[in-house]
Length: 192
Image (cartoon, rainbow, N blue to C red; front, side):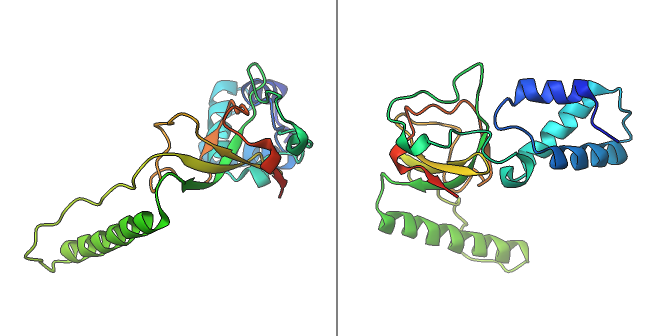
């Protein structure tokens, strides 16, 4: 059953770039209809369910190739991309703290692993005489990111702290819109 035009139009308004992969959209639409017992005329509910699946998907699968970030992004030096009213949906492929030493980050990682192991023992009924301490957060200064629209990847970095991004908490695959090159370094863009 084809996806109704009002559903397609609503999704295009919300996510103009990159374009949805028609095969993915059809499969998602059929799954949502079956799983949620919705009817084809329930546009708002269908759009919400499909949007939720899009946010959980890998953009490699759900988006049409070469319809998001400019293919020549590596040669751009001062262009503004993804500005309203045409935001570009991208996902976080990698997230790295570059403002602290690798040694310091490795120590925090090891402490987190040790505390998580200890928490597992306590839950299993093995008591420890020491009081369990909270799992430490990674130190936070400047993040370097790799973002992808599903076919083109760019490297980006914070120039101002983005409080919603946190190493060890923000999952890879997290979606971001309204990409602008003020935080991106197009000369490092690469095809994936």
